[in-house]
Amino acid sequence: MTQDTTTSEAVSLLQELGLQEYESRCFLALTQLPSGTAKEIHEISEVPRTRVYDAIRVLESQGLVEVQHSSPQQYRAVSIGEATRTLRQKYSDRIDTLETHLEAIEHREVESDNDRVQEVWSLAGNDAIDSRTFDLIDGADSEIALLVVDESLLSEPLFESLHDAVERELSIVLGGQTKQITSRLGTELPNITTFETGLDWLTGPWSDHEVAISRILLVDKATLLIGSYYPDSNDSAGKERAVYATGLENGVVVLLRRLISSGLAPASDPGK
Image 1: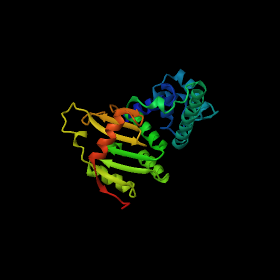
Image 2 (image 1 turned 120 degrees about the vertical axis):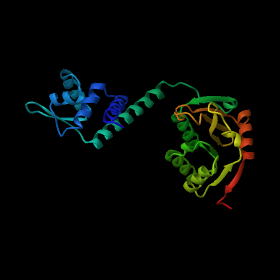
Image 3 (image 1 turned 90 degrees about the vertical axis):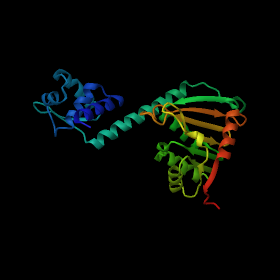
Image 4 (image 1 turned 60 degrees about the vertical axis):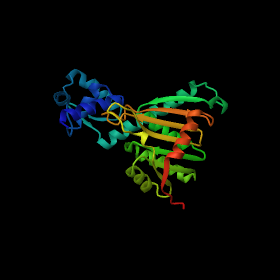
């Protein structure tokens, strides 16, 4: 990755975290200097010199830049560790504030079990589906059955959620489409029953444009999440889709529960 590409991506990320383009460029310029004047910042960042002062004032107010009141004035960026902590806290504070506002706005009544019997919803994007997966695992009351087909889904946050479920003494069954996935699950969670699935139709054989199953999660025998993706896509994470179904009597839930039960053969069972 070239220096220009790295700088461009860093500018984009800083903008996503709330800074404007000129502010981002000035901050990055200062990270390349022990300290610098507005003229030096302008020369490195290519931000118009008259706009450097405005950008620095914003960066100073956000705790990202220090100012030495000399002639000419000198500026320096705080350390990378301090800057990332500041931005992370700012991001976290905004999310907390948003949560407070959303809770104040929300007026939906709590749904009863009868209201949820025949619900089927869809989700798009790996991040959103991961979030729902972790939420379902964290909210499980008694039983979790997880079948992983796409090996890239085996992330640290997933294992953290599963470890928490183990500590809650839930019934957990973990399945993998391949020996590699099953082995990784068994290594990370050695006291949990693991399976290697015999459901070959989950992944193939497929043509380049076919969709494959990425994950299946069944919680408390009543809530089901099924993910799908294009295995050969360059952006498989971004293109993952999922169906989310609830209700003990939901036909989709019943069907998948039976398919999972019939398609898994135990690879190891530490409890026996």
